[in-house]
Length: 240
Ligand code: NAP
Image 1 (cartoon, rainbow, N blue to C red):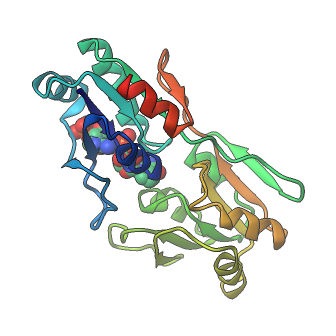
Image 2: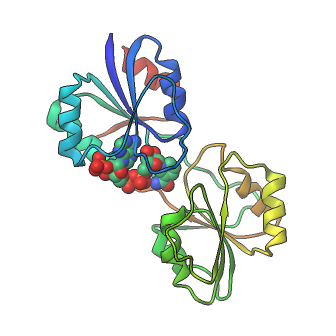
């Protein structure tokens, strides 16, 4: 039986763990979210201690397939996975959901980074901020703007005075997102290009309300890493 490590924290990672019935699977989570959604099977929590720590863990646990199914913006973990795979010779596959695509009626501005997104905000904007609690300081520096910042867990205090925090976890509905935009009189949405269905409703609501979207582009995958967007293909690769 193959021994597979899934670097997780995403819906795709959970789907993969559930479908790998012919392998011994361990899923790894960073352990940052207070009450994470747990995948089926064995789970380990917390960092490995850098790329070297991950390489040592792969050796100690005799892992023979590594799947990087982390979030498309978990750039550091993906870099460590690529480094550890090279160091140990363990084959690595990245499982990445496709990014979102603009549709008719959308008004998107693509930017390369969170600071660029903060810089692209119109003066005095009322912003629906969905880029994660750790990004709040980058945006709150824009003192002319006001933010409704949605996150799964609370941000580190103190919360800046131009930020209201909304604790919530997807999936979200288009009706719910429309109501938020209306009730808070929001006039711009900021999001990372995470892709997937769980958090897509905000894009539809923004389109319907003629609200512009500032879309932070994904970081590239580490060089030379093979990737798929398909859970079944990743399962076949991991068990094959
Ligand atoms: P990151 O910045 O790329 O990683 C920072 C450090 O966290 C890594 O160096 C590693 O510590 C540890 N880590 C990250 N993912 C891990 C995993 N699956 N298992 C064990 N350790 C992990 O990662 P991040 O952006 O903070 O994301 C953390 C977790 O949240 C990931 O599992 C990711 O899939 C999930 N997530 C991220 C986002 C996002 O927007 N970034 C959104 C939803 C879910 P060591 O160096 O000590 O090994």
